[in-house]
Amino acid sequence: MILRTVILCSAILSVPFSALAETNLEMSVASRRPSDTARDTFRERGGRIEQESRVNRLEEGYLFVDGERVACPLEITSIPNSEFLSANGYKIWVGTRQTSRNRGRDDDSSRQFRNNRFHERYVVDSLLANRAVFAFSDSPAVILNEIVFCGNLLKFDRESDLYRDLQEAVTDKERFKTIDTWFASYKPSQDLIDAATAVVERYEQAEQINRAQVSAATALNQLTYPMTMFGLIVGVYAFGHLMMTTPKTPALFPEANLLDLMSRATVVSVALICAHASLDLAWTLLTSQAGQMREINPVGAQFVDSPVALITFKAIATLTACGLLIGLRKHRFAQTACWWMCLVCTILTFRWLIFSSMLV
Image (cartoon, rainbow, N blue to C red; front, side):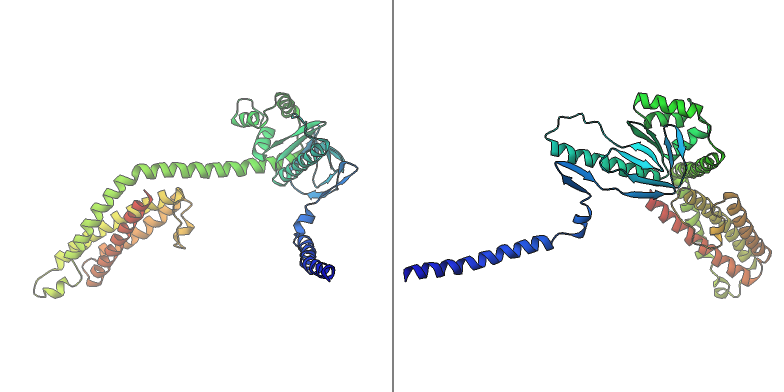
């Protein structure tokens, strides 16, 4: 009886633990992500790592194997269990020389595989980014960005900034000597010259834009204070002038002859409009060229990239309107229109003052 009780208790206690063990086994298998299996790109057989072959087809980049160009399109294939890539049949060495002491053969193999795979990916990504890859037998590839490569290809000058960039990019003295000799003696084809010219022109345009923005930002920093003071003086004076010469003034004094007074007030308002317009034009030019604002006026946006065109457009529009107001200054509707124009320009000036203060 006691023996039966012990066996029954043992069976009851063993059921949950066995079920739990089976559940954990199923969960551990089911919880593996598909990406974990996808990342298993090598297998271990007989104590060595076997790498699977992968193929990349590229339409970009500049590849040179032992000094000779390999034209696009490129079909780059990883060679299993080797330290080479195959690019249109040419071999590219992507191995590494071990300089540290290995902890074991298995650890050495896995580390070597990861290093090779990293260099493979680096070469492919460099070609995708339109960089130049110089591959040599049993030597790490030299990779140059497109402006350093194209600039030195078109004009190889050892006193230029691009040559100094080349020196910084290739730190190994032996490989730099090889690259230096290659640039000095290589005769590029016409299609390579055309491609390099397009790259250099694109970079030069970007550099010009950057220089213009830097110059405009410097000028804006230097002129912010005097322009702010000028805007404050003109804005305060214009506000007081508008309060004293409102369009209702003749209606408040019907018996007084205010024609001459309102005519002179119109002339002053026109002068203030010109001052506000000049300040607005200067601030628009400086901030747009410095990259600190975007013109939302669809008409003005057509001219904002050309200072001469913008100055011409605003000068014609402002002077035409002011000329009409001066010519019609004795008419009541012209006096009212001039007053409202001056008010709008004054508000815009205060807007610029607030905007400038926020940027400082």
